[in-house]
Amino acid sequence: MMDLEKNEKAAPCATLRQMQDFLNQIRQLLHQFFGKKWARVTTYVLAGIILFGNISSFISPTEGSAPTTLGALIATCILCPLIAGLAYYFGQNSDTSGPRIKRKLTEEEKTLVKNVKDAKKALAAASRTQKKALSSAKRELSELQDPKGRRVAAGGGVQVFQRWIVTPQGSGSIIGVTASAEDNTSINKRITATRLVGLGVFALAAPKKKGGGNAYVVIEGPHISGVASFSGDKQQSVGPRAFSLAAAINNTARQAAADEPHRPARISAVQTRISEIESAPEIAAASLLVLQAVNALPDDLQDGYR
Image 1 (cartoon, one colour):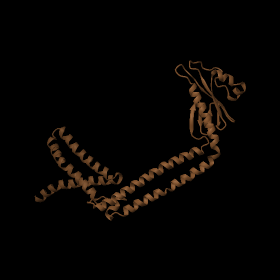
Image 2: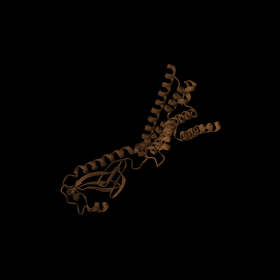
Image 3: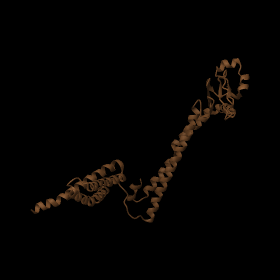
């Protein structure tokens, strides 16, 4: 009889231990994949779900199950916090990731810890500076090596690059190109039959008649000729846009002619700068300072700051 009573008392304890082991195994598994923080959160959420389920069953019990559900609710209210606490405790003790030993630090140790943190901040800042400088240098190199270069202006179907121009009638080097803004009257005088053959028919034969008038940018160069066209309306004049595009083309063409002889030397200089940035002597120096600061810590603190 006494053995039977002992077995009955031992049954809830065994069940509790099984639940604790189950939650602890889940926590350890999650810790391996997500880290300590998420393992704790998941443990508490699981215990909360069990508690919520029993509360829901008690509020809306099935027929004839109210006494049983009440007992389960009371047991759950007691056991869930205990299970969560035990799972957290066992998980902490079984953690093999080598956490820092929690103890009161001396003033000297606090200074050493601060040195480590400062050294790591300096290393992070040096890394950010290196990344920014490297990105800028590589972007500059890409622009120098690109036959077109960076786009600097666009309008009327024309795109203007540092060393290239694209028009509806063709594309080519911008070096030697000139551009002028024209309206309907002046362009009809300038465009001769010979030029029309070179440019092609681009609807000048039947220009659109709108209140603001139309504007054009005539582009001429050693290897490229084209026209940018802007259609006006009653609300705005397109003349300023045409003049702005023409100025951008002329300025870019002059700059390209001046820069082209020096481009190979600039490419070589940027490549050298990239190599220097990638070698990053300041990163190596900052990393050494971090290592020295960590090694200056007491042995029981070093693993937590590596």
